[in-house]
Length: 287
Ligand SMILES: C[S@@+](CC[C@H](N)C(=O)[O-])C[C@H]1O[C@@H](n2cnc3c(N)ncnc32)[C@H](O)[C@@H]1O
Picture (cartoon, rainbow, N blue to C red):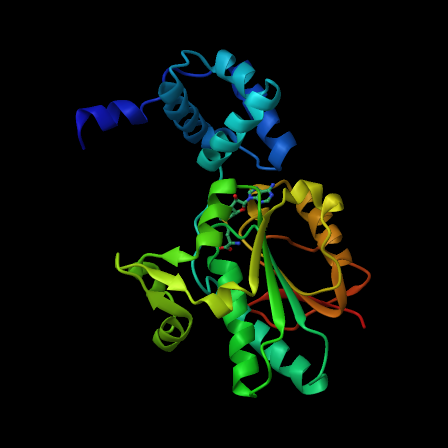
């Protein structure tokens, strides 16, 4: 590592307990994300890196800047990209996608001429999850030569992640996470060696900014499938349950909610029935 990059990773100075508390509170109030003591170094390093770019010398001045009106909102959006974990993969939890495909096959058999399926990826990051949902639906419909009748919505708090999701262009190594035949069917090679989602699939996926703490403002309702994985783990337990309660309300009767395994323990909802599958954490809404 170059000496300059070592320097860039070094926090400016240790935060005081009061400063740490102020940043923790701001982040949790605005996003739900909890920065505990173990992640204090991560917070300091991330803030320091941004403060160096802006030539801001101390945490308190930067806090002032981030919380100061419309200009602060722009800076907040930049900072958020540094503080959120955006790691994702195509078909990240294979068992969840296998369950989804079984569920969609069954739906198609039961209602061959039903309304178009509405699927939702909550915390969609750079798009791998919503495109995996779209590929799953497209594959199920293709198997039975049914018309492509579905739409996927991806929502996230990070504008830069949403930008990547909308662009739908991925490095070749990202496609290694996909079955080769799916890569060939749903992606087109670009001149720069990357791969772009084909237009017919991209047209079925729409990405929008939504803070999961503001679900009350979200227009989604009557969703057939909701995926919420690797987002709630960063939140407090009571908040996880509250968000799941709100998501449950957005499901159509018979709809499927898929959560990351272990992300919520002991949560129940009067309208939902747990899916019997020990590899997946999922629920269906009573019809
Ligand atoms: C680790 S990624 C998970 C991506 C995908 N769901 C998966 O399982 O691979 C978590 C995503 O949640 C987003 N996020 C964090 N806080 C959020 C909030 N309050 N509202 C909406 N999205 C949020 C982050 O920006 C990030 O893209």
